[in-house]
Length: 582
Image (tube, rainbow, N blue to C red):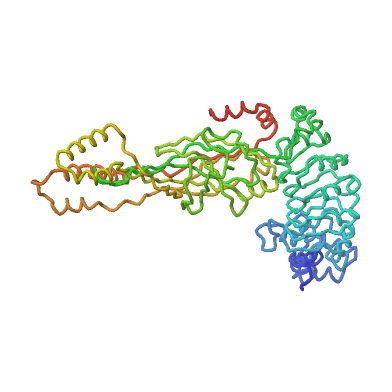
């Protein structure tokens, strides 16, 4: 098994990359006179101002080669100030970089995305080190005994740290910033390490984008950090709680910046007293999904060419918009549109949004189906075709599974437009009676026929409907990651592109009309039907001349935060009624 890659090994590779012993740095033929006169006051003076021997370069000229951005020896833009300092020292005093002397010059060490897995004891050689940045590596464990005691900044974001016990065994006493964002911290067992007993001088703490869920428990530990002024907690499940920001601001009065947003006195006054109302700090999140106008649906009737008077079915179309939401939702139905159902009843069937296949008959109501990534599918009520369909759909989702909600927001949601097609066939209720009456005499048959005509005029025709056939008109993923940060709203127009429906094959009657051509003697019923078809065909032919309109739908998701969530909660059913009228 290969040994873990250490910080010391990565640092040695970094030194080779800097080329501290290669031209124009270090000692060589370009400054060999300094090699022979090293340590001499005369040589040092000569290096600053005296004439340079032929074939050699002055220190000023060598520095210019390092500093000129057009020079092939210039440091790339990603280079740190510490790297520039080391290269200039390699020009002016290369003897200081031999052996272990180089470790005394390094005050800031940045090793980013180098595959480092181990924080080894070699770091103790950096006796002047104040800043250690090891972001975007594979570090899962940090032994505090291997950290220089002079450290003031320790940045470990984008790693795999899941336990702080080893880090807190002997932490650097003067540490002012601890960066643990984008790691794997979770559970109350980690919060106990975030106190003044371990970090008495901590000013800035980054815990963003972990999996911390206990807001009151974490705040009780952080309140011991008397010097804490900057805190980042966004991206954690606990940050999805509506009262998250207000509770932190009121609980930590010394805090100046929360999640990269300055705390103004007006905001602190707004949340005054919230920390003393634990009943408002519920471990749940509230999300409102709104769906507005749908445009760009092709008219299905424009592509139907049924024969007039035929026994064919009556085809009806309806449309809905579906979206996914996290599976751990409480199905309370607050704010759901009138006429929709909260999907827990076993009589409500499932809708396969991915394939569009029909599973069973579905009412035009909200639907759900568990997905591989623990999500359910919800749908707007079905609506018939129109140039613009405005659902004015609004549904509030309440969930206590904050970890699942975070995973859902990271993955995004799938929004689809689904078409439901139903074929209804006419039913003849007197079919059996016709079989009997056909055996009777002519007069009796005429009477029965007259009665049937009256019945047909008086009673509407009955239809038998086939199971609905569903197909997905368009689908796309909507990114929701900004809701994990400081954004409260994601509003977008989903563009599914331009739909081009398949044209049906021409009916047989059209072929007959073409064959007959200019025969004007036979123009009965077929001529009337032909006129109808010509009109339909004209509509189809005129279609390409119109500017195509893409299929679009307005989609919005809002994470309710304080005080908006508080006002919604206090209004109760009033808020529901107000949402339905929008």
